[in-house]
Length: 106
Image 1: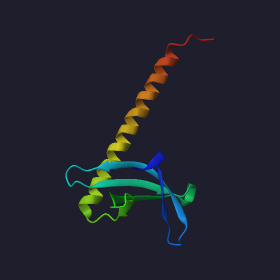
Image 2 (image 1 turned 60 degrees about the vertical axis):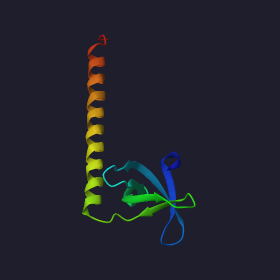
Image 3 (image 1 turned 90 degrees about the horizontal axis):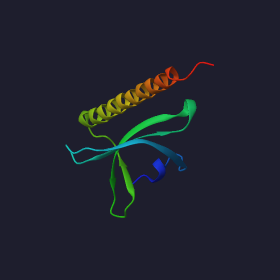
Image 4 (image 1 turned 180 degrees about the vertical axis):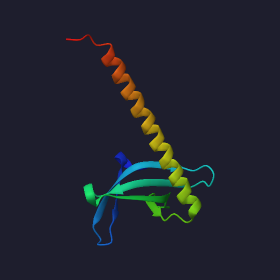
């Protein structure tokens, strides 16, 4: 749906803005799809969360989150992603430490 993890939207000035997808989520509870993405770089980088749907012409439509429940869904997904990344980082660090312990000293 989001080719190569990116998509473009028209900004308020009518220029295309490149968006980098962090993650998407299809919620089984409400049947809606969500996307969390960033725009800009460095100090100008901004984080966004929207609901999305496919229009009849096949194009994506970004829609505003409608209520606190949708914000809670995104927050929950984000927290799960952070936890998984932390677990992955810890496992990688443990593997590196174990590999270094097994190396002969010079």
